[in-house]
Length: 393
Image 1 (tube, rainbow, N blue to C red):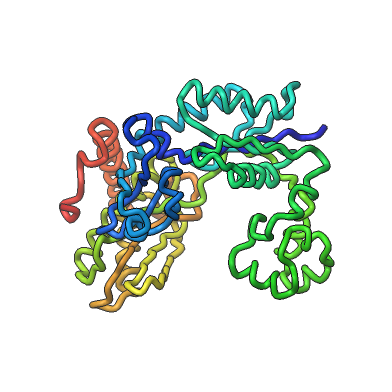
Image 2 (tube, helix red, strand yellow):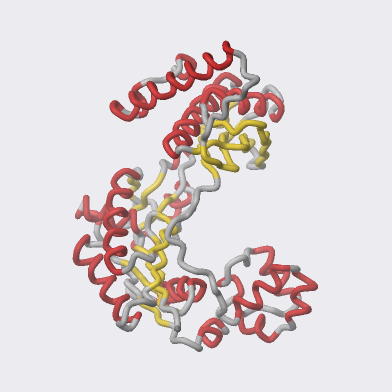
């Protein structure tokens, strides 16, 4: 059976939500993101702003230089998450086989539906816009790779100057033909460095990749070379995954100004460790590895990590490990731009009591568990800020 895969992508999602909340923004250049004086970045920008060269992930200060009249709105992630949930409910009404990639993007496998995938894509686009007022673009193909690229091509081909609302369809057995004229960076795994290495041997387009020798690509690029040759032919056998297991949980802070004060950094680490611990406990998971990430004033980034004998999910334990890593990683007086704490190697959180545990240790573990449960109940009822460690104040 030929698969029917739809890639669904909301157009400038944050901006579309903000236009619904503030009707006066429609048609104006505006961006959602951090303030320029706080070294914020553009999370999303209106299509009117894009005409000035403003782009997502651009520093907000640069965006304002390109477009002095740019209006800046702070992101409201709570609202975006609520709207996203309603969108995903509409997608699930069409098929249970939905793989959510992000807050505004998903794959759908509609192979089990009798209708043409193109008809379903148009219906989905209409339902989301009519029901929630949100524009979207969709790619339709026989696999995830080509469907995603189809969405990107459809958006790029739009000349409306507004939300593209594109639907790009790639018929079965036309995948390689569709991909051939595209630049190699359209494929997954081709960043600037790989693009340069491919260009050095005369490979500029996806069609050039198809024409290249698979053995030669493997010799030059290893496994990536074979993967790219397969992608270039439009081959992708990956299924739509309805549930995605979290591989890590992390929390980061980018400071408005570089921080030299050690106690300020330690306070940030304590807060982040507490949040990582709370999220682990909410998910019923524990981390085998604790990681500390530090970005210096010159934008270089270093990480240190420790794999522990017993997986951890308590914020206090994570904090102790992270502070030790900070001491080992940073020389006193070094300015820090960003700091973050993370836990990875996640496993179900299960406390195994050993016959060698002393009565005092057993009692201590039980009391710590009771304390965590009490804190969890307080935060669930009154919010995450209801109770904090004194060191965080």
